Length: 312
Image (cartoon, rainbow, N blue to C red; front, side):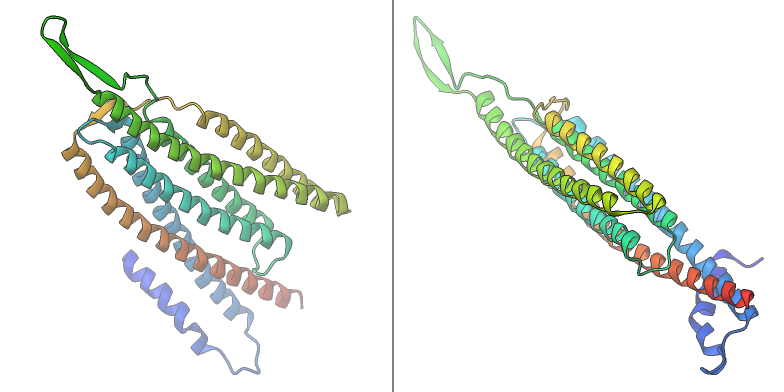
């Protein structure tokens, strides 16, 4: 039995060198040649699809661990704002992935209107749904990190030490100072989230208006249904963003485990290493995704050529 790694190498090599075995430029490929190319390209598409699923699963699993860990911890007076900064940095990275997913989602929506690749509408919609799910998950992860920030508490700025016999003095309350720093970071994160949510709502509002215009101008019933479904999805997203905006105004202070400075520093180093690896994984994932789109398009083009030859 051929080992999987040899099988993969055979498929890739065959695909690479297949064009070298083509007949002269003036002749057209036979049905048998087209069937052979279809089989090779189908194997490449399947392999790339499996690799993408594995990469995506690995990324999601590692992100889940990072988010769940950060949600449970908070700063002690010893660590000052180290944990808060880790949460802020992680939220910024999550926002970058949202932007990456949204760019690819927008490209697929453009593909639905003005096709460049030979992909079916169903294939495009399935990929759009996947990007939608990832965007929503990232939004909830960002919100959960913010809501794990400590709530503001009223502390006296100064404390009095001493008694009526010996006298005493006022000194600065460390609880007040620590809470002030944490509240400042929470407010900064809240403002950043609100800005992104407002931008998302504004973009979705524009998208909804454009869909309504297209819907009114489209006589094709099937196209009208597609636009109606897309409009319903967009309206639901607007409602969800507005709900998230209200939730952002109410941090819950759900994190309960306070970490010392040395623990926070160790976690920060581990987080930076994990972030670097995840960035590489995301780059690889999107490279494979781009290759997958082109390979799937080539597969469908070859299938169409074979179908046309069969008709004649």
